[in-house]
Image (cartoon, rainbow, N blue to C red; front, side, top):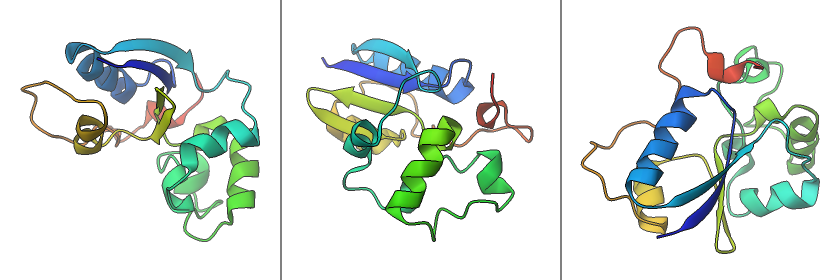
Length: 139
């Protein structure tokens, strides 16, 4: 089983569900607060490598929902600057294991990467299921 550094927004219901799935599969987690982490451009780029810029963003963030930031048209440089200033814009969770880095939690992709032995039906483990999204707000 894998040892995973799991960067989350504490209190986010989806991150809590994601961690339960990982632990049920026998993985060990080191849980870190994504919002308190001293991010640098170099560290964030490790997670984003191979992903289109538009997938770097937390679509539930208020700046995205309001249209202030459009993830589909920003450059890599602009996206990075936005995220260094406001970590809530970063798609969660960020996961690191054995030199590999991932963003988001698509169950099928995580299963292929490190394995999820679960009887839980595949479901959307990223989109907040509430009208008022506490995941997008500061704690």
